[in-house]
Image (cartoon, rainbow, N blue to C red):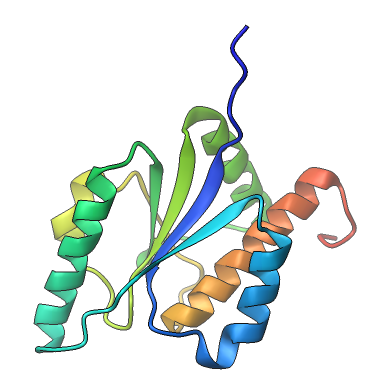
Length: 157
């Protein structure tokens, strides 16, 4: 009998620091330490905005090429769902793939055309635009909520 390995949820983002959100992000990471791994990529901070987006997307493309993960790009022009749907989404994909990875671009986003063949799903947290650090925090909270739903706790009511 083959025992299925516990899959992880990964979050990939270009991060220089958490600044104002350090305390809540670190708290969620502590609570989710067995479930979530935050992969920080170093932001490119020279050249023009267009060149930054291209360079960072190339780094992301190379990172994703080495994986068999289910890749979800947080992208403003995408589908939005409620927390129950998100919970079901994670459960389904954790059963099918070794890991589920959520990708959050840095300040200027990503060039979707450069990586569209590597992305399995596009998800929007809201029709509003958030700083990438806040998007990380919101995503961590939703992952924490998924675990609460899974465990039947009263956190999600």
